[in-house]
Structures are given as structure tokens and as C-alpha cells.
Image (tube, rainbow, N blue to C red; front, top):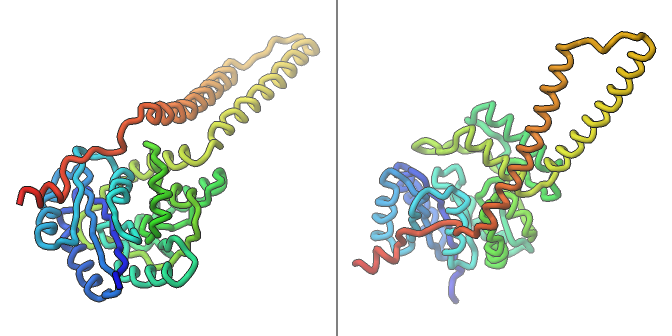
Length: 317
């Protein structure tokens, strides 16, 4: 009887220190899980260190190791999409190379998909120990905000680490949008998902490439991708401001007629003008963000460009 194949997609950006550590840990777990076969698909997202060379070394050592290398840095979302496109397994997992996604959960995730009526087993952190408090705070606020303004519910603490059936992966690949937010895409496509909880694990080596500003921009992309609420908010604020202006105009006109004195208060006038200007610029900024995303989609640029794969390496040999 042929074994099921699990493909594991591992996006990497400047992770030369972590790749050998991750592979050693995965090798132990693959040896302990004899009921399935594995393929490891490393995706080099335009790294500037020796990440690609580490992938080449592993591909030479182990036929289960494959790799894709981009022509430049296209971002984690593009790396995940490329890995999912390349995966040939009956089941496909997405994992971070920093080992914050525990490999020992894979057997139970696989058994759940085989025995229960689920198409995906995701993972969810129950705490954020080791993470800066300010980042944890804003992460919680992001989940509260996006779940309030979007019809697409995203589980607080959910990781990209998940194991999916082939039919769910095929559904995700149908989402060919250029501006990708996978946490939202995974839930938007539907399918029954079960979440496994675990305590936060700190990265084993190296430094994360995610800065606070990078995460902030990523969260904005997620909101724009899965909610039209900011556009509605801008319209509502504009309408309320217009009503306030009408009320103030009537008030000052009546005051002038009754008391016979002109409207005074140069300072308050300047404040009002600045407030209105700020609201207008904010509304234009929100509108501009949506237009820019639409503009990028209409260009139909590729999500990523490959420079090298493990096939090139093996053909040369």
C-alpha cells in the first residue's frame, strides 16, 4: 500500500543559521513517523546571506529536500504561494524555519485529517511569552479590529503553520491575487478547520526579519484585502462633519442676528480648518490605499519569479 505524501513548505529569508537546525529536527521527526513520506520544500525569498547554499547542500544530501529560489525578495506571502504551487503531496503543511512551529505536532495533525471530517488542522498560540509586550498588544488589537469590520473571521493567535488536504490547497491556489494575506485566504476558502493549541516557542537561532513597521504594514494589507469598512468609515466621518458644519453655520448666523456682534474666534477657526483638512487627507489616504491595491492587481504581474530550483542543481550533476 502506497504511503501518503506530506509536502512541507518552508519560506526562508536570511535563515542560513536556522536551516541546518530545522532540517536536523525535521529529520528526527520524519524518521519517527513511518506511516507517511515527506518532501521538504524550502523557498529562498531573495536572501542576501548563504541561505541558498544551505538549501543546495541539503538537496544534495537528501532527495526529500527540494528548494525554490526567487530572483529577488518578493515577501513571505509569495514564498508560501510558490511552495504551495510546487507541492506534490496528498497533504501540504506550511511551517516557519525558526522552529516556532513545533514539528512534533505533525503526526497528530495528520491523524486528525485521516480520521475526522476536517480539511485543515491549524495551530494557535495560547500565549505570547518571549514576545515584546507592545507587539503582543497591537497583535491582539489587530485581531479584534479585523474581526469586527470583516465578514472573514480570523482566529486570534492562529499561525500560518497548518496541514491541509489537497483539495483545500487547490482552492487556495485559485486565489491568484497579487496582494496576498494568507491568514485571511485560508479562512475565506472555507473548509472545516480544527485548531491545535500550544504554548509559544521562541526561535532557536538568528533574528526575525519582521520589524514592528513591517508587521504594521502587513496588518494594513490584511484589513484592505478583507474589509471595505475603512471606505465606509471615511464616508460616514465626512457626512458627520458636513452636518456639524451646517449646525455651526446656523448657530453663528442666529447668534449674529440676535446679539448683533460678528463671529469671533480666529484660533477656533484655524483649528476647525486644520481638523477638516486632516479628515480630508485621511479619507484620501484610505481611498488611495484601495486604489493602489486595485492598480497593482490590474497590472497582472507575477506573484514571484524563480531564478533557480533543485531541478537545476540535479540536472547539472
